[in-house]
Image 1 (cartoon, rainbow, N blue to C red):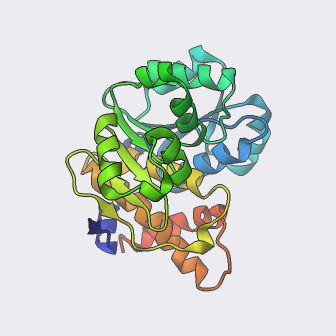
Image 2: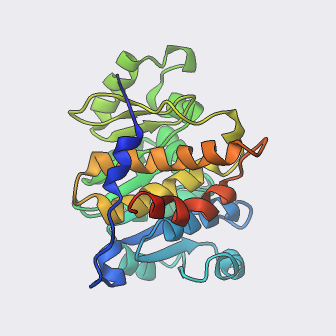
Length: 279
């Protein structure tokens, strides 16, 4: 198992003078019921602040006002409007599905629609409720698309999806299921591990208990999406690892003066942190 170091942040590059928003990735985030809208709002905001060129949030209409208040840079789509959702999915580089989505019939239909419209060259980040739905619905497992899939479960979600009890989630056992899934698995824990096809397991040695706050994982998925949209053309696995390192490194810095670090605190520091890497 290889430890991730700050050297991975060299993935973050200075932007050339001749640039436009289309150069930095199109991200679509899908999730957020009326009850759990905060999750997708944080994921969307994180993608924007991480530098994604264009971000569209497909969520419940009840979240529109909050979305435009929090992150007016993002566009809105009603996540039950399949025709419009499919049109924005078509042009995406990275897609997030699951934060705050819930697990009812409407949620299942939304995930199935996303899976049916993902293309092989796209990065699909499956998180939260979408992981739970996958663990419950055999038909959804069979519908997993041919794409660059990244699962981002915490340990209990991984238990549901993999069938491995938390106490038995060893590197060997986790790797066996990851290979069956033929996808990358970001196992969120103390400390997070990355299992990628054909690559050595990566261990994130930073981060701490001050990150134990609701929405922390949703924020990570947004950063991952933003980084995959911008930097995956260099090296996808390094772009993913850099997103994880960035997320925890900012938290470590904030924890020097804070008992607890909020996900929105991390989002607020993303731009400055990334700027420091290219000076």
